[in-house]
View 1 (tube, helix red, strand yellow):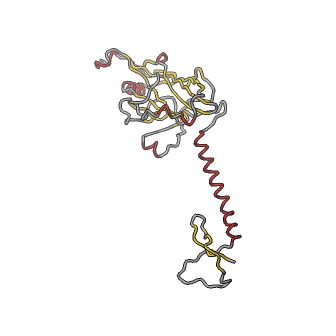
View 2: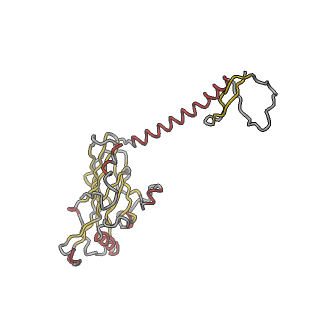
View 3: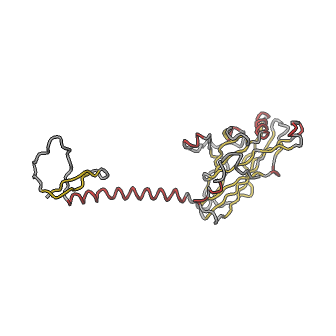
Length: 276
């Protein structure tokens, strides 16, 4: 006995309508009527079972992908993390940004980080920096590089400092910001630029929060006590760039809530907090 069938587009075959006797092999199909697949109950069961494993695999893949996204990457002790340098720009004009290495910082890595379309739209220019950070390893102090600057390179830093340039970096897709340097002098508001001093911040301190084996917070701060005076802009001025790393236990902060501290910010210089 065969069964008449109805379309089932989700599975690609027909479902039974009612019990009717078959006209037998060799029966003709009426011209103009759609050709339908005719399945016996046993064949129908086989078709369902054959389609089911693919659906199970697909569901397992989707659930697995969701789980990875929801829980985030996990690190073993001493496993390296990338510090991504993104951009610099004037604090008071967030729409004006430049590549981080448009300023002559320590030799940059040649490895660029792949950016999605949205990041390119907002002007992100992410590149792997030479800062070496490994999971749970504190670094009291480490030399990044010693660099000899020409007068023109110092003038680039001078211009950036006078315009309150900030920089943006990322660790594990978490942003952090800091100033390139500072200007000192009582007459700066009066326009007496010859009396002010310009300092670059060559040392960065990274404070990274962790919960078990995951990164849940990041912060970068500068140390005014280690600032370097570049006011004179002497050719051949040498600056030693360095950094330190501190790991802070954050059992109170879960990976899924790690962006909560940024919710009140639009990620613009006028609203984010820069740490000194």
